[in-house]
Length: 438
Image (cartoon, rainbow, N blue to C red; front, side, top):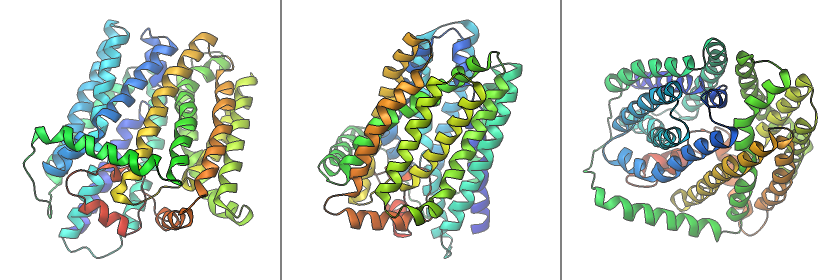
């Protein structure tokens, strides 16, 4: 029984991320081809993030009351419908506002997924008497995620070369068997459903949000991390969505498959950066030094990306940025405690950074016609991020928090399941006790 649950978990993780990553390399190109300008593209991405912010906690209530399988099924149904609506809006030329509203619904769909599958795995394995460590299972899940992302970004680029709508249609097609798999192969042993009372949701949202802010902004260690996320992510999200058009402009022709290849290479650079953390730690003794060096390399690489005009040199510099980012991500403190309130607070600030980066820097990109905006955004955001993130390892309690993080980062799971702080907290606490940091 336990082996079947693990196989189902790995299959769901792989198929879901394959479907999602098909559009990661061509999403901006698709929207530009549909008639949006770069600022409107960024606004649709901000609308998606707004959906994440608004629905993260309510969908957590659904997962922890009605069930994780139901939450995943709602996610897949929402993603199927919104993906096809994207294609219909582009084909019919309906413009910006329909894209924006559907993007909010797409954000809703993603929040039904975050954490639900991981929580289902923990509950189901515990109920079936599984006594082995969970770390190898989550590591295999990350391998499935990485392989799916690589295949998806490459495949999306190749399909987009034929027709920019094809990756979206293939994504919708993959969601159909994934829905069937979740329907038939996700038993929920060890989980007790509870009645979902809608009138409790607003009060629960208010409570968790207020406590997250209290334990975040007022904490001397967590506050710099929150502010650092707000600053640095503002640029990062703009760069993520703008490079597709920017690089093809430098290349000089519409080779959409190139965008897919660059997206795949970017995912590999993040993995390479993760792998460099241990050897670099021998030279850079402190977490603060690691963060500062990483952010400085990112800033210099991105500024040069905006100043130089040679396609191959700029892509190489962007990949250097990806490696430096991969070094930084495991080193950023992920405080645990107070039932994850620190993480919720940081999540809210990060999402605000996504909105700010998509809107503010998107407007700058529209005005400047892409030229040099990436570099200017990097020069503004990253040095500030270095100073703020550097402060995250100082102050009272920093040693205790960082010790917890070092323990958890040995087997980090990227799915933000710790955001699920409503309803039953048992699976999240179990993960924390096993040293898994979100």
